[in-house]
Amino acid sequence: MCYILSMDSDVHPAHRKRTARPARSIANVLLAAADCGLLTGPRTRTIRGRMPAKLVEQAKAATGIASDSELIEAALANLATKDDFWEWMMTQRGTISPDIDLMSLID
Image (cartoon, rainbow, N blue to C red; front, side, top):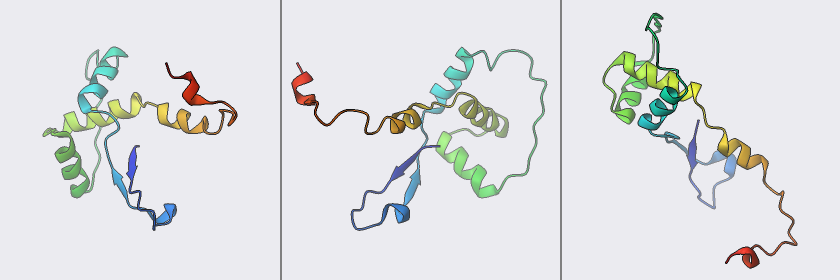
C-alpha cells in the first residue's frame, strides 16, 4: 500500500492526512504479473465475495476498470507482484556516515 502524506508542518506526523495513491499503474501491474507467468493457464478458479459498494466504485473509478472480474484480477496481480523497494529504502535510513561529503561525489 502506498500513501502520500500531507506535509503540513504544523500537524503532528501521526495526525497527518493520508491520501491513497496507486503505487504502480494497473497496466504495469498486469505486465509484471504476465512476466511472472501469473496470468497464463486456464481460468478455473471462481472467487466470490461481498464488498462495500463504495469500495468497488472507488476502485473502478481509480483504475478505469468496469468489469468486476477484471478488477479482482488487477487487485490480485497488484498483491502478487508487490514491490518492496520503498520498505527496503526506509530500512537504509541513516546508513551513510555523516563524514562523507556527498557533493564531492557528483561529477
